[in-house]
Image (cartoon, rainbow, N blue to C red; front, side, top):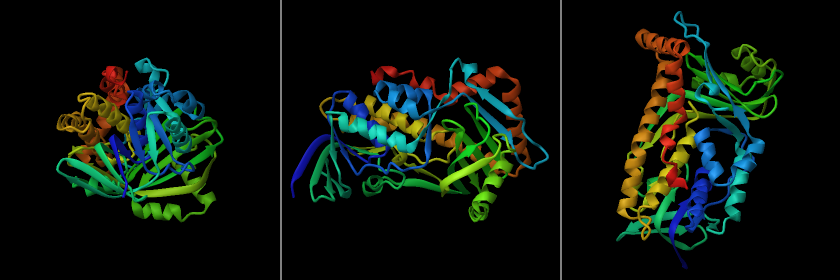
Length: 395
C-alpha cells in the first residue's frame, strides 16, 4: 500500500470543503482535497449574507457566482397563526443598515460548479478522488486508508464531510443530537408577481414558510411543519400543492407553480461536544447542523473557514499542533453555541403554546417594528458584521 504524506488534508468536497481548500491555497499553502465532486443537479439554494460574499470576493469566485445570484434587500415576517395574540408584520430593510442588500441567494448547482472549477484551477490544491475507509490516530500520527487502497498521513485533517461526518465519529468526537417535531419541504417555484428582491417568512403554529428570491419571477421555498402535516401536503397533487402554497402565502406573489423535484427532510440539530481534536478540525455541517432559520448554514461554515485560516497561521511548522487545534476550538465554540441557541430559541418559541412565551415573542416583534434603533441593532448582529471585523486574517 503506497503512502501519501501532506501537511493539510481536507475530507469532503461540498461547498465548505472546497471553500476551505481555496482559502488555504490563497495563503500560498498546499492542501490535499479528498472526496468525489458534488452532484451539480442539486435544486436547493444557499442564501449568503454580505460578510460571506466579501470572503468570496477575496477568493476570486464572486464575480462568477454573481451572474447566478438574486439580491436580498428586504426580509418580512408575517404571523399566519390563528392565535388570539398575533404579532405585527415586521419588515427589515438593508438600507436601514447602510447596505444595498443583506446578501444573495445562489442556486446550489451553480455554487458547487463554480467552486469546483476554482479548485481545479488552483495550483496549490491537489485532488484525490476517493473516500476514506478508516481513520487511526496513534503516537501523534493521523492516518487514513482510502478507497483507492492508498494510505494518507496528514499533519492536519479538516473534516468537511457533512452532517453524518464519518471522520467526526471515527475519531471519537461525540455529538448532541436533537430531532425537532418538524419536517421541511424544499423546492423552487415560479410566480406571476415580482418578489422585488424580498424574502418573506410566514410563521405558523407548527413551523414557518420561508420564500427566498431567485432570479426573475422565481423563488426558493422552505416550508417547515409537523411531520404528520408534511406527509399530507406531500401526498397532494401538483395543482393542489400549488394552491396550498399560494393560500398560505396569501397570494402575495400571485399564482405559484412548484418545480420538481420536491424534497423533504426531518429538522434536527447536531452539535459536537468539541470542534477539534488531535490533529483534527471540524468545519461546516461536520461541526454544526441547525434548523433552517436565519440563513445560518453556510454563513456559519464560512466563519469556520475564516477561523481555520487564522488558527493555521499560528504555527507555520505544524498546522495540526495542539496550539492550532485548541485555539480553533476556543475560537469557534462561542460563535457556534450562541448561534445554535439563538436558532433553537426562535424555533421553540414558534412551537410553544405557553401564553407567557407567546406574549414575549409578540411584544418583541412589536418593539422591533416600532423602535428602529433596536431593529437596526438586531440586523447588524444577525449579519455578523462585528464577527468579520478581523478581516486581517483573510488578507
